[in-house]
Image (cartoon, rainbow, N blue to C red; front, side, top):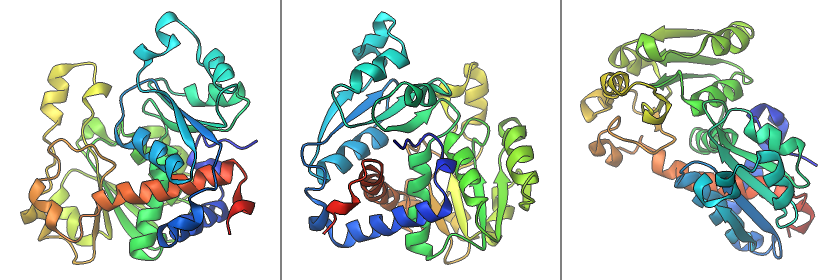
Length: 308
């Protein structure tokens, strides 16, 4: 039985395979409309989510399956003190596959070790968010036609941003990738990412504080919000939250074919005027996320033989 806890659980060959399925789903949705007939996904969300939870639910419904689950810890037996291990044992009796979001790092791994069904990590604390990474990779490959030989700018909260950590891990496996890490000193990428991923693999990168200076050299700009829920100090959050705001004036500094991605939700780090720029693809990202999650569900449930 396969689980997805980290993006590194999938080889680059498996990633390519999933993205090929997702691309076919986009072109031929009717072909996939009944692959998950009589199958159920449990969405176990211990913290709030809009895009990720609804994306999983939409993916399963598009495949002909059904959905059970909860959208906050308060509406589950976790409020009574039930452990993650016990919850997933119970859910294994009801569903065929589970997607879990949890504020504690490692919760999805604990679930997978006690589960009778495939578990997908839908975000665990500040640690990993593998299906957002699959979404990012599929968006990039679909719109750029490749996942290698690019300069990737990551901007904003690089310390607590689990989407950033997962994307660095994933893109570091492709040739010719270079990172520009744009953040205030207080929100830099954690040392373990620098040492265990970038330095260990010899991936070229630079840490800078100026978005304006970085923009002319980027193939991709991945914006992130400063996450209030990861801060212990309200004053620190207020001081950091407006560090970087992408405007049309700044976009004028960027190459004509640079893509702007964002895992969403945004607060104010991308001006709404940028939405009309064809380089802004963060809403397309959401749709690509449905396709890749559909492909992942098919893959983990081993239903590829049902594809016509």
